[in-house]
Length: 122
Picture: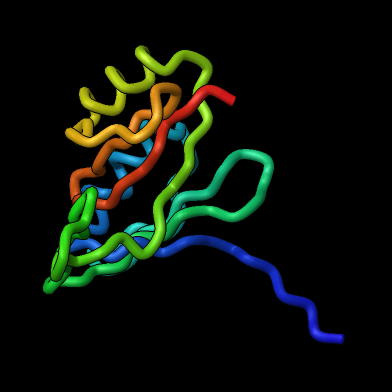
């Protein structure tokens, strides 16, 4: 039987290096490949990482999406110890807190390229 291993999630962005630095600051992960069109981050101890691919025509999704809006295809869930502190650090790193928050114990944020991600305390 053929084995499949998820090695990462790829986010399109007009600025791979800038978006990678945002997530590196947020997650504390190690930088792997680092060039203008492709950047990778790897968690300490292994596991699936994040990659950032140059997409000059990137159109950010709209959160929450209305009729005809570009829809979110996926989002990242990031566990944190302290929700308020994590949101503050994410904003300082370049995130925006989304206006629409569907849950009290989760904060939906948008990264600098407009990709939604959720911060939550498990």
